[in-house]
Image 1 (tube, one colour):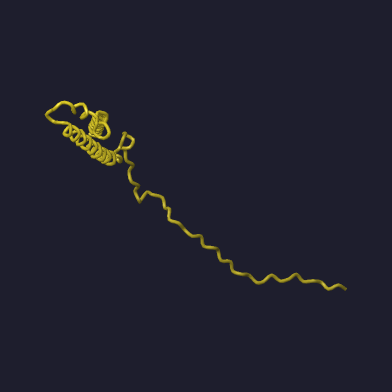
Image 2 (cartoon, one colour):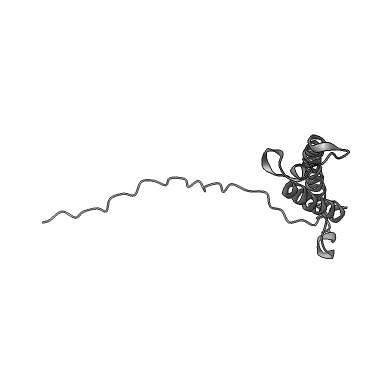
Length: 124
């Protein structure tokens, strides 16, 4: 579907380029060639037709571009290969290693009797 819409956008863009090239600023493009003769559509109706066609093609390109963005976003999470399709099995809690954090408790040392100063021998 994405490729089909993209091809339609491309065709609409090419058609729009051709219609814009036929037009001339200030309404003098294709319509100016019919100014001397009296045609069924007339000069003014030709410019109106070309202008309306330009707006319709621009709106078509805009809407189709939004649709392609929608299709692209909806398929962005789709697996692209067999590797993406394979899913890992969830871990069994009974066989999972214990990873609970433990806080080390500092060992409490019982203060012993204060060390006695070495006995000094008097100088005799």
